Amino acid sequence: MKRTANAHWNGTLQEGKGEITTQSTILNKTQYSFKTRFADGVGTNPEELIAAAHAGCFTMAVGAALSQAGITPGDLTTDAILDLDMQALEIKGIHLELKASLIDGVDEAKFKEVAEGAKSGCIVSKALSVPITLNVTYA
Image (cartoon, rainbow, N blue to C red; front, side, top):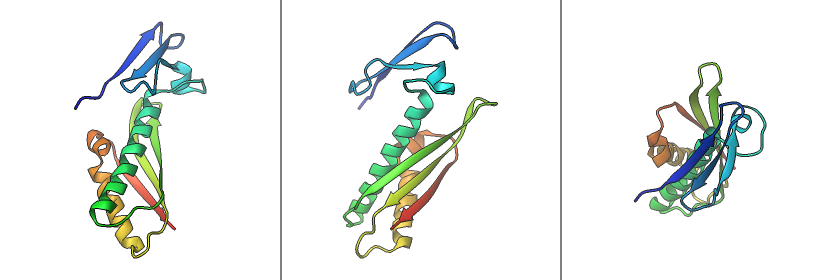
């Protein structure tokens, strides 16, 4: 299986602009620029897309791991916070904040064990070489 995306850029770093399109076309010529990446412009940016991909992948991985353990998942919501060091121009890490509804018969320790396994087993986590931390709110 292959997944594709396309980016187009025209102009200088600070005055230029670009568009990103994904294979599914959910992003279709979605604008990105210096302002959307490093300030407050309208559009997206690569770091935001990495965080979105990680949040989506991890949340699905938690649901899958619960299901494989014979547990019916409840509501799962993940915020992925990507730490971009502007001085070094590098991603320093990603923190995952998982909020999950209580599941009958599953204690917090078991749930956190499943979530930790999903964090390391998530396809996007495996693709990243930065530290990944996790906090779970299970209530």
